[in-house]
Each structure stands twice: as C-alpha cells, then as structure tokens.
Image 1 (tube, rainbow, N blue to C red):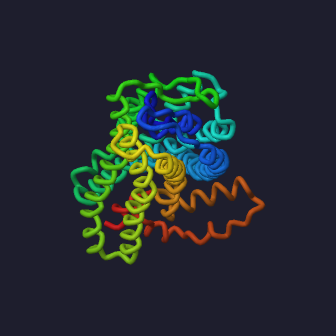
Image 2: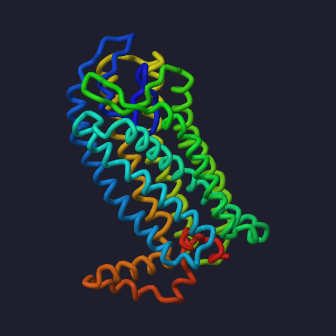
Image 3: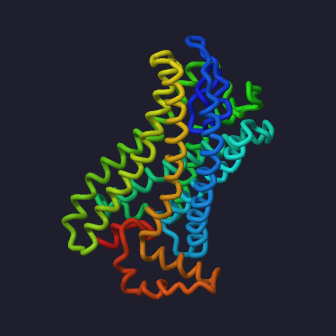
Length: 357
C-alpha cells in the first residue's frame, strides 16, 4: 500500500495516508481534504466487507478440503492454495482499514514490513494459482492421456511450493524497502524509494504479472477449451462454457480498471500527464475506488472455483449443518450421489473435464 510520489512507488499496497503528503516539483501542492475524508469513510467500510466475506468464503473452502484431504488431487491442492492466498490477502485488510481511519500507521516498523509483504504475496499468489488452474484444465482437456500420470499429489505439492516461492520473490522489494516514515499527517507505511528503476519494477510487476499475462493465459487456454466442450455430448456443456466466460470476464472487469488507474498515476508521476489539481484529485479517487473494487474479487474465488461444483457444495453444506445444527439445511439432501457424477468441470472441486469426458 503505497502511493507513487517522488519517494514512493506504485504497488498493489497503497498508502492512502501518504496519498495526501505528496509535493510534486512540477506543480503546486493540491488541497486533498475532501479525498482524505472520503477515503476515511469509504475504505474502512469496504475493507471490512471484503474481509468478512473473503474470510468466511475462503475459510470454508480450506476447512472442507482439509476435512476431505484423503481424497485430495492436484485440482484440490491448487484450490486449497488459492483459498490460502486469498485468506492471507484479506487478513491484511483490517490493518489498512485502521490505517485509513486514523490516517497514520500505529503498528510499528516490523508490522509495516510484514503486513505489506503478506499483502503482496497474497495478491500475486492468488493470481498465479488461478493461472495454474487454467493451465491444468487446458492440459487435462487437450492432452488427457499425456498428463494423467503427472497429475499426482507430489506434483501438486511441488507446483504449489514453486508458486509460493515465485510470489515471495516478486514481493522482495516490499520486504526490503517498506518502512514507517513521517509525513504531513503522521506516520506512513510505504515504500521509500528514490530509484526510478524500482518504481518502474513495481508498475510492471503489478500490470504485467498481475493482469496482462494471467489474462492472456486465460483467453488463449479457454478459447481452445470452449470448442472442445461445445462438441461434447453433455447437457451441462453450455453452463460450463458460461462459467468459463464468467471467470475471464470477472477477472478482467475487477482488475483492469485498477491496473489502468495506477498506470495513469505512474505516467503522472513521470510528468507525462497533467498535474493539475482537479485531474490529480479525480485520479486519486479513481485509484481508491477501483482498488477496493478489485479486492472484492477474492470474495468471488470460492464461488467461481469451488461452490459451483455439486460435490464441493454438498461437502460444504454437510459441514455447515454440523456446525449449525439449528439451521435446517434441506438442500444437503438435494445432492444425490447420481448428481455428483454430473458435477461441473470447474470443480472436483473444479475439475470439469474428467467428468464431462
């Protein structure tokens, strides 16, 4: 959470308290009181909502997969790690909600580095696991016989370790350069960087690794998968196609506005766009709104990747009925064993192909 000023960089972890401490050399300081007041109300509310929904949804996914770990396959391992990534991400939001309310960081330098790094690792690992699951579906559908023997439990564990390690490597600048600094409105937790190369790294990593490559992989893989699914003799093939389109559309609609806005911010810091106060205020407001909107995508992941599968849904309902016996979950009986055999591709939890094939 940092703002791209002369000593800060653009990252997925924005420092809204530092937003209004900026003083660019190429234009006069602007009055951002209205923006600060808006962020003080808007951010805690939305962060709290995203935290609550994301924690409940992804927590339930983790609990169900842990309970049925003896039936785990590669898809479930990816789904489990996707839920962990989203949990790691949403657990940082209460700190930033408090940060935006008091307009200052009160948790110390260590927590500043730790929370910022966890936020970044959760952000990238969630997207990377979505890419892995997309590639896994592609290989299963397009090269079923060749990849069957490689989709083992060990392969899933090794693949997960690689993704987590890659996410940590991408997040190293947050770990090293994030610190508590003194601003006009109190202490801020942000990256204190003077290097234009590191600022460029942050904008490229966020846009290239966080949007362009994942979206490209999804579009290419699913554009090859959909014609295969359409030709299959399955009553649910149209629902599966709609679900695939929903995955790509949701990812683009939730993340593209945010990535575009921070790229415009980067151009403004480089002096390529106007520094006029009205434009500056609108751009800051756009980043605030689009970032929070993008964060809600982690609440949709359990729905898109887990709960659409009838097998997973029944397991989740059975677990909820044990936790809350006073609630009559009659829907748990509506999922017969025969319906499980027709469960969607997006799940085995999300492994559509073997079922339809």
